[in-house]
Each structure stands twice: as structure tokens, then as C-alpha cells.
Length: 238
Image (cartoon, rainbow, N blue to C red; front, top):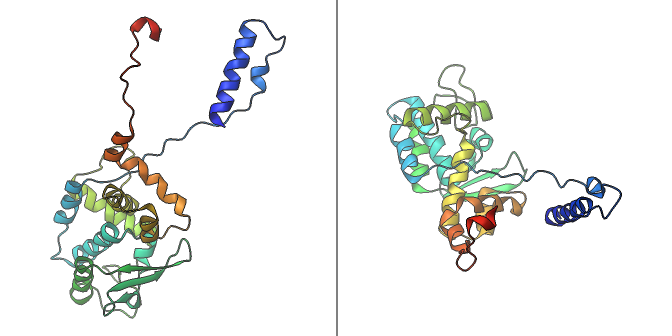
């Protein structure tokens, strides 16, 4: 529709320039709205390694933050689901993470990867404060309560990215969603089907996964058409 409206508007302007119509009909063509270009924030493999390497796992906060970041990187869980993750959500014997997503209200079952399980076990056994709270990730200072969802997770990711020296430019997103995007981009680059990516990320609408297509630069280059045979000189471009 955007292309049709633009073509119609150009045609009517041509009629007006040639004085073939007494009225400015081009003004009656509705606008289709500005085209929005969505830039999906991701991190590189090297940046991922930098993030994990700068987290000091010798401290209580470091153990907690490392487990949280690793969860986001390896499972793509949203920050609100990480903050609300409960001890009973980890099925150690089955090797799964089973939750009901806060955003969609839909159940989600993910594999408990060894790397993620080891990081969470290290925090639970050696770093998590004693508390009757059912949630895994708690404040490091009393009162030992659950983290305040998005804001706390954003603070964790901002600190780690600052320590790693990545994404420090103006308006560069630094939240856990950036790590979620990165997982989707990696899977897409490895030719994992979109429905599989959608199910792992727990999308309520499978169409949401298509936004990650813009991150797959290698496959986008394959789609690009060459300009051979349609060369133009400078005069023609004027």
C-alpha cells in the first residue's frame, strides 16, 4: 500500500505540473506513515566473552550477577522472568527450567544447560543469603528480598557492560533484552528455523521473531542483487 500511494501521488503531481487537472488532487492522497527502521541491539561473540570474564565470581554479588547474565545469554529469558525465577522452577533431575512467562502468561520449558545450572548452583549454595523467599535471585543486603524486576536487572547489565567497556555510546541499549536479542541472532545465523527460535524465546506471536532477520548480515548479503548490467553514468543520475 505504501508503494501504491507513493506512485499515485507522483502521478497526480505530474498531472498538476502539466496543468492537466484544475485541482491539486495529490493533496487528497493519504499518507501511509513514515517507514520505521528497527535496529536490533546485539553483542558480538567477543563482547559476550568480555562480559562473562569481567564478572568477579568470588563475591556474592558476582556469583549472582554471573548466573543472571548467563541465563539471559543462554536461554533468552526476559529480565522480569529472571527476577521472578523461583527455586521450584528449576527441575534439577529433569534438567529443565519451567516457568509461566509474566509477559504472555504462557508456560515455557527450557533445557537447563550445564553451564547455566552450574552457575546457578554456585550462587544458591555459596552466595545466596539465607531467606524464606521462594525466589532464586535476592538482594545482597538486608532485607534479603527478590530483585525489583526490570530495574534491578537493568542495573546488573549496565554495571557488567560498563566493566567490560562495551555499548557505552549515547543511547546504546544495555539491558538484558540486548542479550536476549543476541541469542536470537546467533540461532538465526546458525540457520535455526524461525518457529524454533520463537518457541525458545517464548513469543506470544510467532511473527515477532521476524524482527531478528535484520541481524543476520551474512544471509542478507546473499539476498542482495548485483548492479551488473544496469550501470548509469553521472548525467543520468541528475
